[in-house]
Amino acid sequence: MSRVAVVGAGTMGNGIAHVFAQHGWDTALIDVAPGLLERVLAIIRANFERQVKKGTVTGQQRDAALARIRTSPSLDAVSDAELVVEAATEHADTKSKIFRELDRLAPPAALLASNTSSISITTLAAQTRRPGQVIGMHFMNPVPVMQLVEVVRGMETADETVAKVVEVVKALGKTPVVVNDAPGFVSNRVLMPMINEAVFCVMEGVATPEAVDGVMKLGMNHPLGPLALADLIGLDVCLAILEVLQRDLGDDKYRPAPLLRRMVAAGRLGRKSGRGFYVYRD
Ligand code: NAD
Image (cartoon, rainbow, N blue to C red; front, side):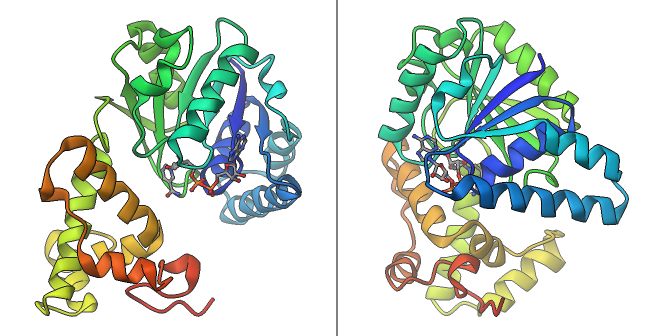
């Protein structure tokens, strides 16, 4: 395979397009937001520039990769893709509609992957007439840097699809880990309760955010404390994932900490709003 289409050019979509283009894939990058695609190309260029400065990519490789990316405001651009990676807004109805459209527009043999953090791959597959070719490819943020891709096997995903996607992930220089479709998969099912418990510690006055993060960094060897990580992910995103875990697993052990709700209500969303558990000046 050598032709990919990435649907959604936000935080994740631009990183996913970057990595595919860097590894030689003809890459169509699709987004419906007016004016976004020009800005995103500038972001991708700047991110390649950083790699050139670090010496991990040459100027020639950068230019070749950038030349492999074409942008489009329409899903029609998936018409020659062998693999589609959907990285649109985390909204179940939006993604279901996109999968129905992709099934209509992408070549019959194309594999359809979603980068969703919490929406059921089995449900997305059921929107199509090719559920055996639908799979989760859960990249981590920032995509060009992080090693893991959680490969999520839906109830109907064919073994052949899993095998092909595992090979694609390896060819991108990343490490696939295959898991089954379940709320939060493994990454968020394990991570979010830890973040939530850290928020409860702050809420109940057990420790300050600095102390909670200090314990986890120095004592557990985590590169980033859970509250600094929550600020990076976005507190609204953490809240939404905890709500999915609580609802879909039917277990109140995933109940979001009331302090997390209050902070989101106040607009303290973490890095992206300049303030979460910490203050960000840039
Ligand atoms: P984002 O809001 O930054 O970007 C989403 C983009 O999708 C927007 O630019 C929007 O215009 C576009 N979009 C919406 N509807 C569309 C449509 N019908 N067709 C084409 N484009 C459309 O979101 P993000 O943070 O990049 O997240 C994207 C996906 O990746 C979500 O499913 C999210 O759960 C998942 N994810 C996010 C992270 C993270 O840390 N941000 C990590 C792993 C997975």
